[in-house]
Image (cartoon, rainbow, N blue to C red; front, side, top):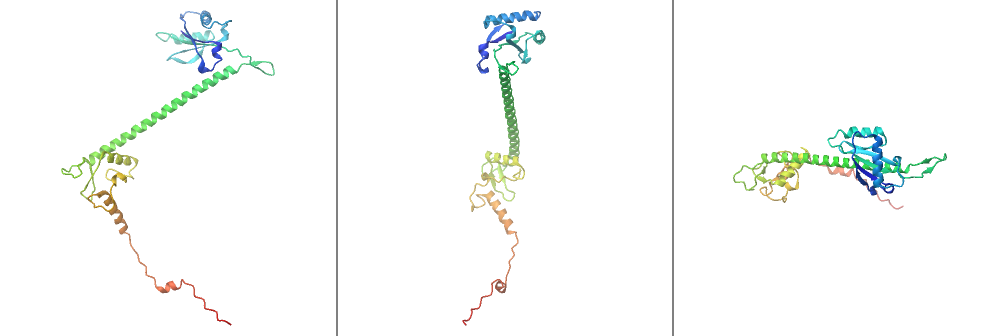
Amino acid sequence: MYLALFSEAEMKKTVKQWKASNMFLQLKPEFEWDTVKVKLLMKIMQTLQPKLINFSNYNFTWNIPCQQSSQMQLQMDNNYKFLITHALKMKEPTVNVKIEARVANKGNKSDSGTEHNTSNNSSNSDSDTSRHANCVKKKSMKKSKDSKKSKEMMLNKDIEEKIKLLCNHWECSKVACTSGAMHCFIHPESPEHFALSHNHLVIWAAAWQCGLQFTDLERPPNHVKFNDFHVGQAINSAPLLQWHMAECSQAISTAPIINFNLLPKLFNTLHPPTAKPVSPV
């Protein structure tokens, strides 16, 4: 049994400033509760050396690592029997016992003259609440990080699969390819080869991941990397851009043109009549 003893002087400090005096106590399971109380008081006398000692002046709690993590009360015979039951389940029974001196508090008298020692309980409850809040916050942050990592892994996996599809589909099989690339985009209306680098494939796959309305396996995305050419160059030097321009001009030229011829007399009706000059009297 490992003992962590806190004197009254330590208990008056804040929780972060507490320093325990550690001791070790070996007990046998057949010991009675009264015997255990005497042995605990002897350890208190040896370590804390109080002027007066009384079992009721201390708070006794216990826990078992990896089995009973929460602090349990150890103030009476039933508490001790419950401790022994859990400890004997282990091959090497080990129990942590926390002994806290109760701080003498005069308290505030009410109208009836009774005293209320609530400051110690409120401070303990506040510390427990803050610890619980910190644990919940850490767990939520860890879950959010894990979910973010899993989403990023799934997204990267999908993009890698699309890059493989693009590589297999646009692998250049031309022996004397002028671009010299392993992968080339070939427009269906022209035999020209447009060299596809790894950067082109990554951008294509990322745009494909966003939706089929942006691009697909056959249609490259509308991105600056695929239109890095000057307007006015020949189709041999800038085939992709010229194809887009040709398609746009074809769409505009197919629109019908209607001409209207209006007679001059119609415009005269839109002008107000000129005023006649007034003759002098």
